[in-house]
Image (cartoon, rainbow, N blue to C red; front, top):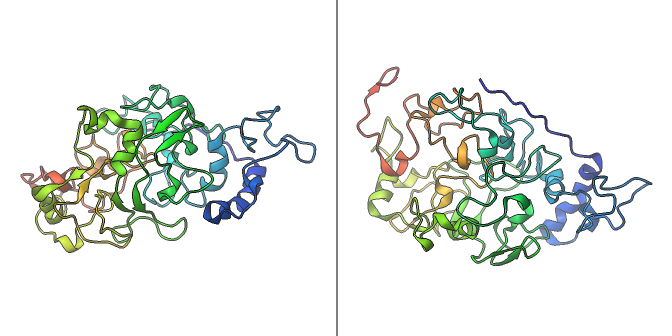
Length: 356
């Protein structure tokens, strides 16, 4: 069984102390610049950023921009990088970077003997303090040209704040002009930094544009160039939306109702969705990249919302020893959540002890 074999290096005390004044900066632009920056890289006779004795390009208090962000947002204020991948923080919609630290996330056949490291768990942000580096396999984003060697929190999020969902960049230059986004930020409403995590009655509300925005980096997986692997950013249509609404798990494939069909683990885009929605989709609702993937990382390969390589959801974590992604139906018989739209488990035989 796989076990965590990496140690998270503690965030320097200075950065932790400085995280408090920056909170309001994102919120209303009224906090202290020194939450993230230092003018002279010197304080009380000590280097503020000892890794950059001559200072760094943006006068930051850390040499890596992700380390600056994670000083506040790793285990608090959103908790996007928990300190234990076997006991992650409450899910808030985007997944969690802690799964990049896993030594094996392969729960397919013979997964214990063929480990897939957490390097494949999602977006490989560069953060020396958290013990993660650039993607060990890919030099550019899958299906795109964004350089893997410069990926950080600020590749996607504007640290100085804007009016967009999760401070995501819209169309225009990013990474100091080294890359250009062509699609605007998506229309969505996320869960707060505090309070309960994601649930069926407390989901992230995806309204429109998420797939187009992700195509900024992963364009080969979108219809714009003919290399589409699965529809994204298009209407579900009548048959798929009906299947979604009726599906209530492998043990009850046709007993659901649209009024309560929304599954936070398999979201869709619709202009009517809110963070307290429970209703399933209409024919005009859209399938999106985030219907199957989370943004940061998960304990499944490719940031999957569920492990695509297991037959039964209860098998997740058995081969690898990684965190088992919770089954929203809490059933030993539950098969892949692909069935929420495609209902290919309709012919399965249910036995008292599990699927025959």
